[in-house]
Length: 113
Image (tube, rainbow, N blue to C red; front, top):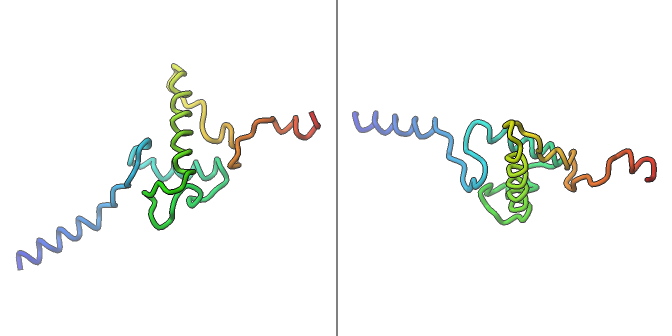
């Protein structure tokens, strides 16, 4: 009976703990991970499968995931140059809901400049 109680307790603890995210190289595995990922999807106007293999989120098979890491590093480096500790640059700063960053202001495009 004691063995069964121990087994049930161990199983309950295992189920209560979410699995640790795998293959995180730049982002911390904390309560901000999912909101951060959601901000990426909004900033680029994409869904999770744009960067992730939906059957194996840890997989690095999609080149977009590697490029996203590069862009995260770039944004961190730029923000690190500001001494006020604020976030000045995010994915949305350039992407504005598109997979390709905007390089021309919308006003210039509309007026034919």
